[in-house]
Image 1 (cartoon, rainbow, N blue to C red):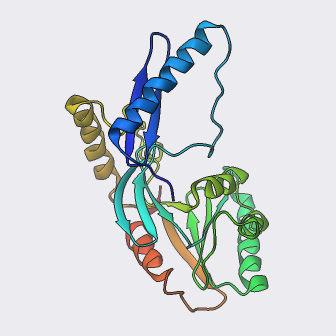
Image 2: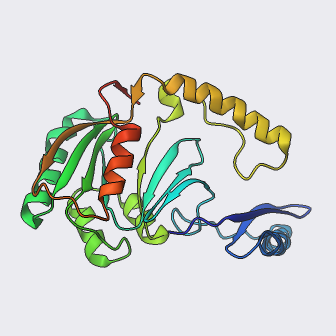
Image 3: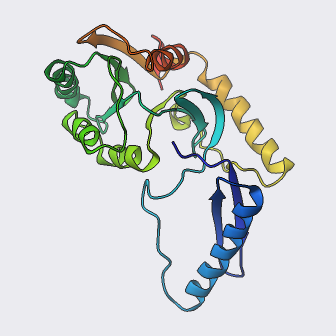
Amino acid sequence: MHFPKFWAKGESDSAVCWQWSDTSQEDAQAKADARAIELGKIIESGRQPDRYGYGNRAMREQRIEEQPGLVVTRNAYGALVLNTERAMFVDVDFHDDPSQEPGALASLRSLATQHGLGTRIYRTAGGLRGLVTSATFDPKAPATSALLKEAGCDPLYIRLCQAQASFRARLTPKPWRLGMRPPHVRWPFEDEWVEGQFAQWQRTYEQKSRGTSVCKLVEHVGPQTVDAAVAPVVALHDARCVGTATLA
């Protein structure tokens, strides 16, 4: 999993960018300053800067909690996300079309039965989520990507798993499902005032999140055994986001 601890903002006359480092804050700042100058020259020349594609760069997410094999981060729109090294989450989106649910459920069941994989299946507000419990997987392996594709996962999710060398599952609601806008500031916060703005947003978000669930358990298909490396993931995931309240 790659969630750099050090991030820095670089600015030139015509460009602003963020860069990261796994080494130090100073290294991140040096990279950010150099990249900002480079971007400024590109913009001034009339050329278009190269744009990073989804999953092609490290994700600017704050590490909130860590355990062996998993990290909880906060994403760009303020929700907490569970990231795992080997426990495979399968994300199937209905794209606002609930009529897709029977087919998606059949695909997840087929994945479990045909490959002999114990799988917990959850209903989310916009789709289904599978968590394979009886085995672990390498997120970057072609065979893993093939399984995710077979289950009907969004190609962007598959690419992100490969790029970040991890699987992901959201633990807290999407803010717009609570009638909120995402925060207008992001970590790392530039100063105490900006951090205070986010803290105010977070208090409202947590208050409105009460009485909601991110997903509910539908069934456990296939072998009931739970791999020792997956057990902590199941425990954290189900305790933090599974319930019977309104899905958000």
